[in-house]
Length: 250
Image (tube, rainbow, N blue to C red; front, side, top):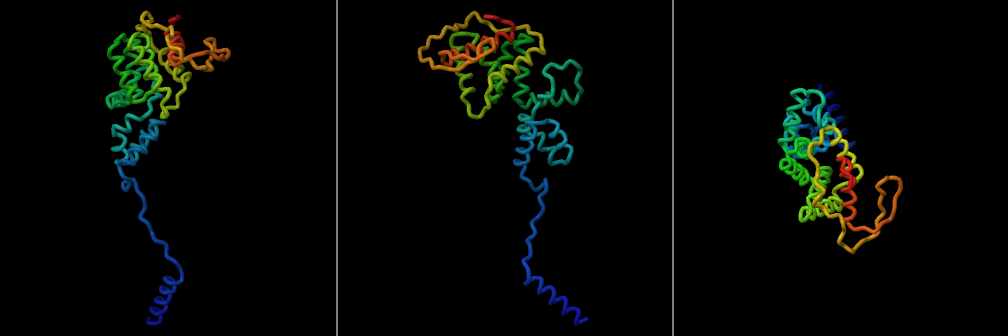
C-alpha cells in the first residue's frame, strides 16, 4: 500500500513538472452574455430574417426576453409580409405587425404612411407617418416624403430638395434611386390610388446657373446622355418618373 502511494505521488509529480497544464476556461453560455450584446445580435439577425428571430425566441427565456426589446422590433424585417394582404391574416401575424408599428418599426411606419396618403386619402396622418419613417432613415419613406414635398411648391419644395439631397449624400445608406423607385412602384401597384400629388404649385424651371455635367439615363430608358444639370434639375427629373407611377404625365 505504501509503495502504491509512493508511485502515485511520483506519477503526479512528473505530470505536474513534465508538461504544461492547460488552464480551463468556463464555458460560455447564453446566460453569461451581456443582455445588450444579445439584443444587438438578435437585432442584426432580425434585420435580415424575422423567421430566424421567431425561431430564436423559442430556444430559451433569455432569447424570448431579448426579442421583445424595442430595438429588436424596430430593426426586424417585415418584407415577407404583403403591404396589402389579399387573404385574411392570422391573429399571431396581426399581433406581430401591430407590435412592429407600435414600437416604431420604420418599414411599418412607411407602409402605414403610404396607405393613409394614397389609398385612404388621409393626407395629414400619411405625411406624419412618412416623416417619422424618414427620420429613422427609411430610404423609400424619405423618397416618397421628399417627392410629396416637391409637389407642394414654395418652401415645401426647398425642404423636399434638402431632404432628398441629404439622403443621396448620406454615407450610411447604399443609395440606389432606381431600386428605391421600383420598390415604391411595387407597393403602390398593390393598392387603389384614391389620392395623388398636386403638380399645380411646382415650378420645374431651374433658376440656378451652377450646372455641372452629369450622365443621366434618358426617360425612355434606352440610353444615357450627358446633360447640364444641378441637384434641383436631377430631382425634378426624378419627380417626373415618380409621377408616372401615379399615371400623371407632365
